[in-house]
Image: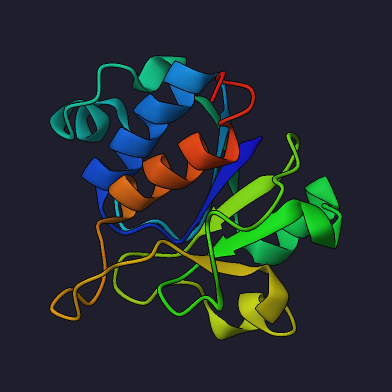
Length: 152
């Protein structure tokens, strides 16, 4: 399983997701442009001393990622607050791609077009909350997606 962040903006979120990837042995894929630098000083400032252990792959854009991986459509899971289904519904492919957008705008429309049946949300019970923190959502999603492998 792989976590894909499309144009992430906040280094602390990406750092926290990277730590989760290290904990679970997952690849982290980042799609540029990034809203931060990945140089050692910036990563250290984000508080993630685990970064050197992250299995990281960078792509210049969404199409470069698609060209390199050629993922089967059914192995891609997109996460947005407006998804028609919850994260509890799919049978996740153990080799699948968990795909998240940037903190301020989510996933680009061009990435989501024609994929409505592959867009999932983390349910929220309160109407007072518009969205959740990206790192929190990614962690909740990956643990749900891997529940069988993790003994759940």
